[in-house]
Every structure is written in structure tokens, then in C-alpha cells.
Image 1 (tube, rainbow, N blue to C red):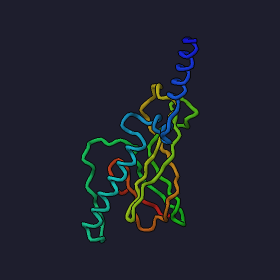
Image 2 (cartoon, one colour):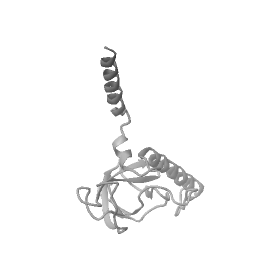
Image 3 (cartoon, rainbow, N blue to C red):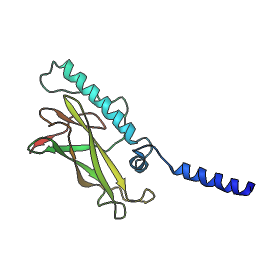
Image 4 (cartoon, rainbow, N blue to C red):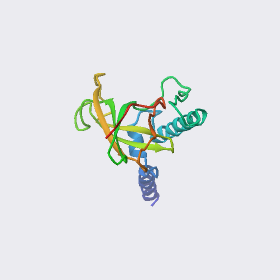
Length: 172
């Protein structure tokens, strides 16, 4: 009888260990250490705060140059430019990524999300790699990801999550 209780206990612990209440666990598991989605969201909120403060300091007029983050090499995928749809609610960002999709060797699939304020939108690009154990060449390929904004972009700036700086924007 003691043996049966031991087996039930091991099965229960194994099942509970597989449970995860974090809704971002699958995305976070695909990100390198130090680049969890929660950390990237916090980094985006900090970039927005710096940008919003720069807008206040400039009196809401002219070009705004926010203070860069206090670290040398922040995590995340840098976006190079952005294009908005005619209605301004859809944003496509361009960046350098893996050559092919995640179904192929050394490939990755990408999706993006935004953290928004009244004056700017910070875009977080999330990569889901084919296999984290692969040895891949350090070649990049032009990639893009499209996301829907909570509000039309309007006159808001689009910021890169790594440096919190505005990127070139094309209005569609």
C-alpha cells in the first residue's frame, strides 16, 4: 500500500510541475535569458516614460529627442522603420531577422505588440525560433511584422524598444 501512495505522489507532482499559470510562458520560453516578454514590456514602458518626459520638456513643439536608456546593449529586436495603414490602426514594422520561417532550419516566426501612450507607441517584436540549439550563420534578412494599435496612430511617434528612439514612419 505504501508503494501505491508513492506512485500516486510522484504522478501528482509530475502533473503539477507541468502546469503553468503564466499566460506568457510559451512566448517567454522562446526568448533568450533577460528578454522575457514581461521584461520587454517593462523596458517599453520605461521608453515611453522617457519619451513622454521629453515631450513635456520640449513644450510639445518641435523634434523630441528622448534620453537613451542607461544600459549599453538592451535586449529586444530593433525595428528600423514603420508603415501605418490609411486608418492608422495597423502598423507594419521592418527589422532584420532570420532568413526563413520557423518551419525551416535557423528560421524564426515573428509577431509584434505595442505599448502605447498619448504621445508615442513602442513596438516589441517577438521571435519564435525553429530550434534554440541550432548553430546558425550570423546573417540577417529583412523581415516585418504587423500589429493592430489600440487607437489610431495619429501624430504619435513610433519608438524602438531597444533605445526608445523614434524610427522613420511612412503613412499609408
